[in-house]
Image (cartoon, rainbow, N blue to C red):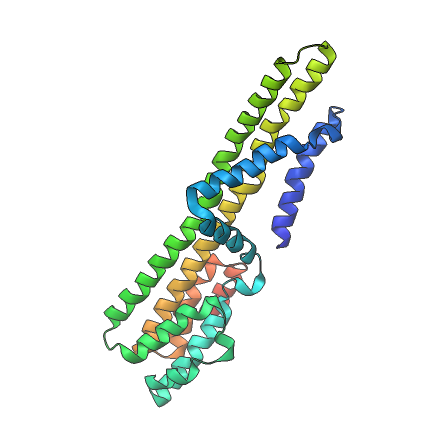
Length: 267
């Protein structure tokens, strides 16, 4: 997990708990098993019903993978590799790309599309066909990632509803056993913990997770556009300098991009 996500989570949870304690709330009263089971387990079940076990598990896996640094797009490495291949192809021909397919630096999911483009550059003579094929790959990738985003977005919708269900269930139990006024007030307060859990998990966990995946998708799409432009320029015989200058225009979308954008243009 990157530092910004950790800081944001600590600030959100800390602010909520601090605000509760300022009014002299009892922290222990916020942690109850039954509303947690109703809201969290109920939300997981509703999400699995909606998307299936496989897609739900894939979305959770994608969320954790998105925080691993090696899975993040690396525009610097991409530009360097495309420029190296451009120099090689201008001196020895496009077929030399096949010798780079087993390059150890091109391992990982982020370079799968680059390898596909390398194969297309050697097999496809029409640049328009090559570009259409790569765009189809991007469209398919986008649909897959959008489904992962939808899993967390829908979970964010289910959670508050399950919280209300838990509260209603708690009130039904309370009102069916009215004996002591003091115990009644305490039980009603406990019943509303389910609503609190539903809103909390929706707005601090599920919806932020969906927004995080949306941001990751946007950067991944820009990264893939870089691959399309770079490899089409390479296949057209453009120099590595021209390719580098063109791809440097994409730096805006990445961390510290403004500085790299300026350096790429000035070189």
